Length: 462
Image (cartoon, rainbow, N blue to C red; front, side):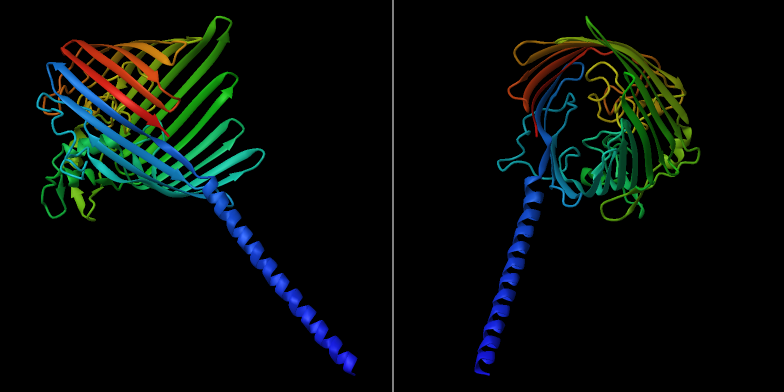
């Protein structure tokens, strides 16, 4: 009996010891799993974005100088079971469009650096914050995003245009399918247009400050569908369509590229077409950062604008070793040429500055910019060449001739005119490293505008 009692005590002790070891093993395994999860999230973190400093100068007709600084930084966590989170900041100070009254005297903006102030282009805020899910198999890959994100399409500026909503893309073989939905959104070009418009809150008070104008969003639900393909019998293609309910019936963009390799260089033939159809009874829904509705005369004036606009673009590119050449022609059809949410987007036109650096508002192909008016049209013939040396230096020359009933604004305060302009822009770029580069370019304008615009830039890409 005594032996049995002792054996029971020993067995009980052994069981307790075994249970303790199992618990310790589970705790250790749990700690290991936690460390593995943290390791996956942290070690897989990616940083994307850029930072630049620019100096602009105008000579002759417009005069003036300006400086511009911008930082865009997005951080994406490592994936955990296919899930990840992306967050980012956007800092912007200064303007890229100097006038004859602007100078760089106050560009430092105080001894302690910049602050959010009364200048429309000075911003500091969250650019991206969204969660994403990736699914990959042997034959396909799928990605979904939910939150605040940049609008990446041929209609938009992928670095500045923002939306809150949902995005999904599916890649199968060499074909990519794309969908984007936005509940609230804004393009940078449209933001500048609204700033220059007579906007009022729902209570009737004017939006008189740049802080209020900078916070405006569009509430017309935005839908974008796209399909693209690469390396299909030496051809690439993109087809995109967008709708903003009760505002823009249809934005359409399509291009096709044929690549031909030879012993004496590579040739590329590209054709593009883009159109816009504005709602005949438009209702533009605008809102401010205080939750207030914003009204404007767009409800009436949009009825008087071009209902259907279109552009086409044909170009040929040639590349041999470090030498490149591009020649093309862009024309318009319909009763206008404003076909995009941004000034250029996916339109592969020549020249360097004529489509985005005069007023930051009206030039280029914006849907509410110069080409939005009835009976406007544009023609652009362009030529560009570049050469890269053994050292990390590249020189280039762009020439573009712009004509037509283009309703061009030379300054934000000026009345639009139909201009004939020849832009000649030599430029040079030097790479200190793969990420860090310095560049300089000077655009000489001949014709209805006597002007020289220069830009110096120091840029780092993360």
